[in-house]
Amino acid sequence: MENERVALMSSIEAVVKRGRAVVSADNSIIIAMVQEALKAGRMETTFYVSPEEGTAVMQWYLTPRRIKEMEVEVVSKEELAKIKSELGVNVPGALSSRSQCANAHVYGLFEFVQQGIREHGTDYVRATMELKNTAVLRINPIQALICPICNERLMTIIEYYECRRDDGKLLYGCCRGEIPEPILT
Ligand SMILES: [Zn+2]
Image 1 (cartoon, rainbow, N blue to C red):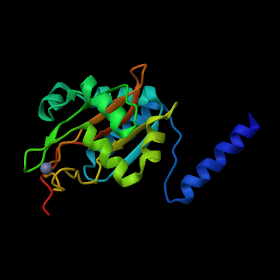
Image 2 (image 1 turned 60 degrees about the vertical axis):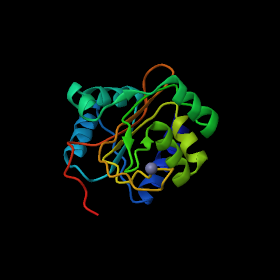
Image 3 (image 1 turned 120 degrees about the vertical axis):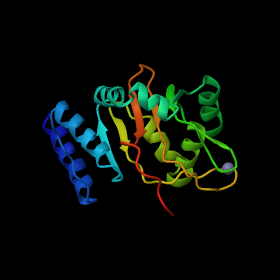
């Protein structure tokens, strides 16, 4: 037990040293913080929470109105199989929005995982998707989605990706708060 606590402190110190904060709080506080981050709009915030908390937040977030506005769909078994065979990343279940570039190429979960690998490496993406006791919640991502076919930046602000574990609990969620004004570039 003591060793575990010492290991925990050194992990916390490693995170704080990188300029990030670690917060330990009751579920209700964490959920309130996530809701606050969503309201704040453009500030990117990542939460590492328990799969149960992550699931609760996404359930709260994904209202029928948002599903309709963001055109969130269940990712097909075929797309998940393609993510596994071509990208080597195992995603048991997922929901996602599907955007299009100016040339009408579809950008869905496959392209999102592929871009993640291009920007952060396969090991990092795999390590995230293999987390056992942690769900990653990315709120208001600032990263631009790039079409892999024509290399165009997608002029969309609609982004919703949700990956689930074998047991149906959240593994990774990426979403935005109230849909802001289009970003001028
Ligand atoms: Zn394109």
